[in-house]
Image (cartoon, rainbow, N blue to C red; front, side, top):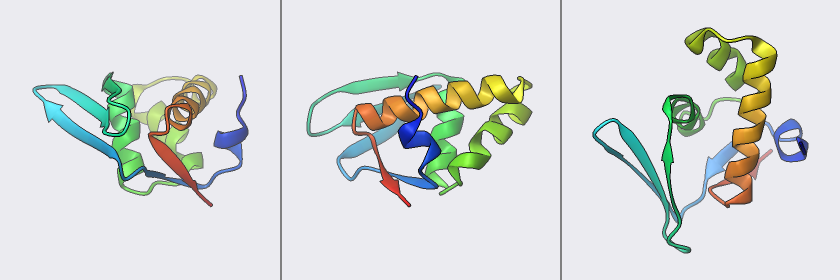
Length: 96
């Protein structure tokens, strides 16, 4: 897994062309340029909220570990994967 984006970035921001809405318990994220849309699970919704709150990326796995009662290393691995997917689909952008 390539952690380049995750490990070298302190903060991220949501791209301007991204809309997010809650529909019932689901969080739907739409890229208005491409028409792509995503439905986030509970953990992804929590990470999304942390990104919206400008949380340092390095703090997100700690919060995931505490909130969802999972091992820190597993939380870091899953967070890294998810953040890199958000970069890949141009949902977020780096802010150093």
